[in-house]
Length: 474
RNA sequence: GGUCCCAUCGUCUAGUCUGGCCUAGGACGGAGCCCUCUCAAGGCUCAGACACGGGUUCAAAUCCCGUUGGGACCA
Image (cartoon, rainbow, N blue to C red; front, side, top):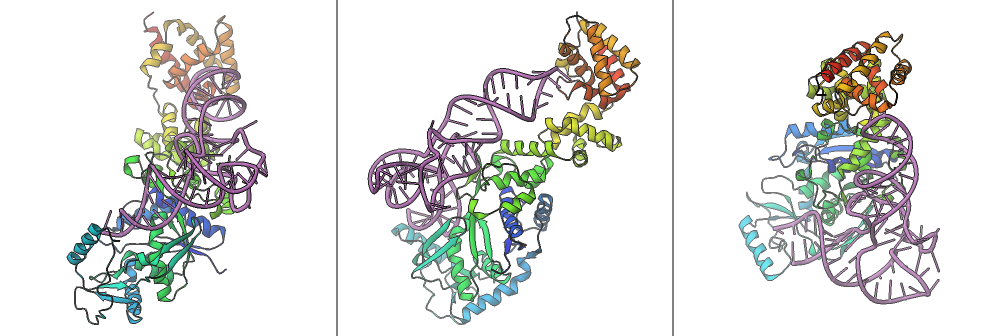
């Protein structure tokens, strides 16, 4: 087989959504797996709904998830001449004809057919009129085959058969001279030498309309593969009411691109029981044989888990860089940037297995990045009591006197303090200390916390804690 | 309404093509236990599915037919 060429062809009518990314991903994977080409085409013939902003959003989204394209982006609006030429070719071959039926006439006949229970399709009124010079208001229709069957060998669905007598003579050129979707797609796919059309299965029933056009135009018919849709929890097609559907919204929520890709690829594709795949593995292992035919429900919780896996296994240095923007929401981005690279990495390591998103990581890092601690009221009330004051004071003295501030040294300081308090358990000391140092009841290990804060802030915060505890009701 | 697609735990799925190894495996989520300075992470355990009805066969999650349910497209 010659080189595999696939394409992703979004309409720029909004942001790049998750379903689109998944379609693009399967195309990309197939191309990369077989050393083929992945082409990006912008389907912007619907000019009323297409915007440049949406095009930028698509490119931005594709770049973020790392689905790089080899050719394009091509824009359909720059290829209008091509569609007209092909339409005229069909007209000359008498595979297309002018139709002068008006919208109202069509609508009336449609209703009539519906009332009689007949199949709703163009009745072919202008088919044999042989209109040569249609004047203004004429559309060009494709003369669809009316006998036999069109059989699609779908890469995913298998053999799908359609009866040709149900096929409409669909319009390929509107009266305003613009090509219709089904026509421009065929011309583009043919012209671009697309060998495999991998798209959503909402296009499956478009396929028997398109195949005869490829044939009439004298082009090779590509192979088709129709991916099932992604649905929301209520099993309806995934949309805004199911939550965020824009891929960039996930970036903003602190998801990692690799995690998104990993989650999306498992929505419909599998390789045994494996859940986590590197890109390299994905490219090596991807095959349409293991693509599910049925639709899949988008499960945000599993996505969160996958993201957590990537954070946990991530390179601290990279994560330290990626987390920075998430401090902006807390007004601490500059404060964060002032710390050394080494410190940031330690911070990340401490929080890596506690954060499911980068936003969560930033949130968890707040007590260490901020100069001042903010005590959670409930935590302070519970743990910063009068009873703990003397113990805390002892600890402060020992921390001040400690020769070095390593985790090991800190641990022995803790142990010594505890030895002076018969019957006191580690937890009984660690929790008040944790609250004094972080303001919270949950944090990384207490020695990690101290190390991150450094001796000065530890002492200052412990003193503050003592002050607060002394003022507490006995 | 017509056409087409789909159907294994709540969800993602393995198994289906090539029937027996399936008293149906894994993952997310849920419950519990362990570990433990808290929270996580991790480990272990439990609950949880072959949509239904017919066939074919010694044997069906797996093949065939129908029903039901969901989805898409055309309007």
